[in-house]
Each structure stands twice: as C-alpha cells, then as structure tokens.
Amino acid sequence: MRPAAHAGRPCRLLRFRVVTELLPDFPYHPDPVSTSVVIPSDAVCMCCGRGRGYIYTGPVYAVDDLADRLCPWCIANGDVAERFDAHFTGGTGLGDDVPIEVFSAVDRRTPGFPAWQEPRWFFHCGDGAAFLGRVGAAELADHPDALAALRREVSGRGRPPGQVERFLGALDRDDQPTAYLFRCRVCATHLAYADAT
Ligand SMILES: [Zn+2]
Ligand SMILES: [Zn+2]
Image (tube, rainbow, N blue to C red; front, side, top):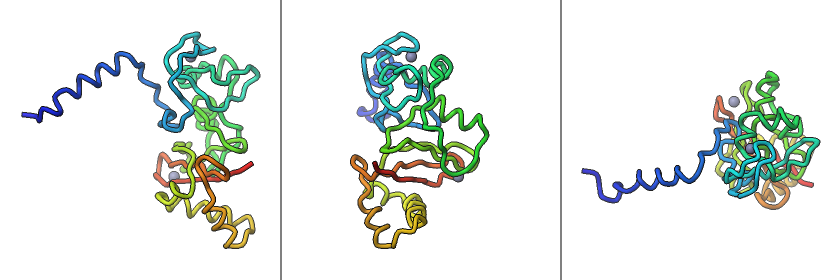
C-alpha cells in the first residue's frame, strides 16, 4: 500500500496539465520561466495570433517590434525566425567554433536573455551550452569551475589580483556587474562571463 499522502498527487498533476499547455523544450535554455524571460501572460502572439498563456519578454533582434509579443511555441518551432527574420542573440559566441546549424539553433530557435551589453552565448565541446541564468557572487560560489574560468578571463585583461577579486565579489544577479551562467551539454562544465554597462 502506498501512503495516503501520495494517493492524490497524480490527480493534481493531471488537472494542472489540462489547463496549461506544456511549454516547448528548449535544449539551450532549459528553464526560461525560472530565468524570467518567459512569463505567464494573456498577451496575443504576433506570430500565431493566439493567446496561449505565456509570452517571451527577452531580447529579439528583428526589423519589426516584437518585444513582449511572441509566444515560446513560435520561437521553438522556428516560425518567428522564418517569418520575421528574427534572431535572439547579438550574433557573438564565446568559446568553441561550432557548425552554423548549431549556432542557428541557439540564435534562431532559443529564447535569449537580457544583459547589460549585447548578450553572448557560450559554445563548448562543439555544441551550444545551456543557459542557466543571471548570477552574482553568491550563486557563483556553488560553481567553482565557472568562477575559476571567470577569474582567468578577468585576470587576462591585465587587472591586478586585488582588483580582480573585488570585481568578482561585486557580481550581482540583479545589479551590475552581472555574470551569466551556462552548462556545457556535453561535458557538464559550468561556464560564465560577466558584463556591466
Ligand atoms: Zn505564437
Ligand atoms: Zn564541454
């Protein structure tokens, strides 16, 4: 016998699925709701013309003004990219060179993220890395591999060690400077870069 506490759980899940269309799968931005670029909204999508309960609030590079007017489903299936010639990154990658199809999957079919400068995406082991979110010093403490890479990168700009540590200590998820955390989809290494205005 299963404990009574578990008995009702599948039922509640089922009811939740009936009212909410499941969000599409974004391999390079696995949880766009937690990173706040996809939010619950009644707004109508400019691409499919439907109000589907969620809207994308991140950056879009296109001639048309598509800000806060796209649903995640039209981003995932490539309709937005095709219809509006839209891109979701500034076009600059970090890390490995990758085949154009890989870059295109990130740039054309993946929700972007807001940054202080034009956002950049990490590529590692020949694939796009998964964006995990904006992070500060507190969150980076859980990812020593990303912190070490960031320290090497900042030191490489010729700053003295004291200044590097002050910069890393000042990183803030909600205020500048901010770091952007990724995880390689192949080797699972965490990667990060930082920017400010
Ligand atoms: Zn749509
Ligand atoms: Zn890797």
